[in-house]
Image (cartoon, rainbow, N blue to C red; front, side, top):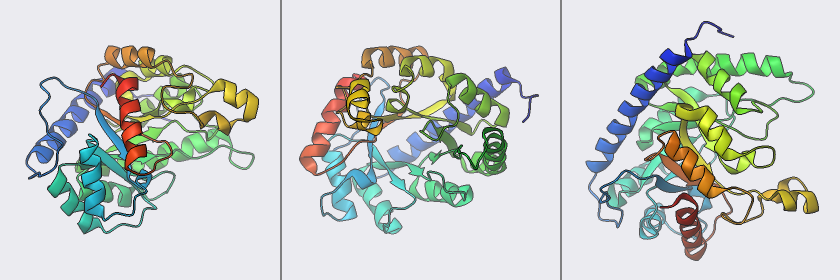
Length: 294
């Protein structure tokens, strides 16, 4: 582990670099012809709303799925590494609708270079990274070292390509506190490395607003879902996720205040909940609007 990283220097460089990435992406999006209903007409910055592409279950073409997202007021989507899709069709759908692929979901796949190239191809700005897993066979300290090395090795290429490598807080028995997650990111020492903060994933053992303030500028994007501690107690650990956005134990007004306090006013927020048809996606859009104050 590199204990010589200057956190203040890392903070400044990351903020500046991420600002350049966001500006470049915005300019690229504005230059795309669009016949869809998504328009950059808001005078004030706002959080941009998305869903994962695999959440769209209607049997539609790629283009019609993007048109559906535009009709429902979504600004973008993300594509998972395991999703089988015609990449050229995606590019044409982006150009036609103005709905963007803002990121590539690489999960815990080891090949970050391919993920970075995929994000660039789609015109996105990030790769979601899951940093290993601690279990009986994989010790905490070894996972810490290995994952830092893996991400650090890919960071220069990510910087060169203008892509953020964003580490998600998941249930992998690793990076169990916001202080440790902040340290893990800072020790890598790259402005391209940050956090993909999943709001619902911390409710079982913490409070999202506390994580947000501690992680601060390191947060590059948000996943939006809920968790119910009561369902966890009554029905089991993972049953806690089986609750709609706004009906669990996430204090959304507190989350909004914390995001405002760290200056997160125009980033991406992507739903990660059970998807469905047009009606289901419309409901998700409405719930996100209420939760995030959009």
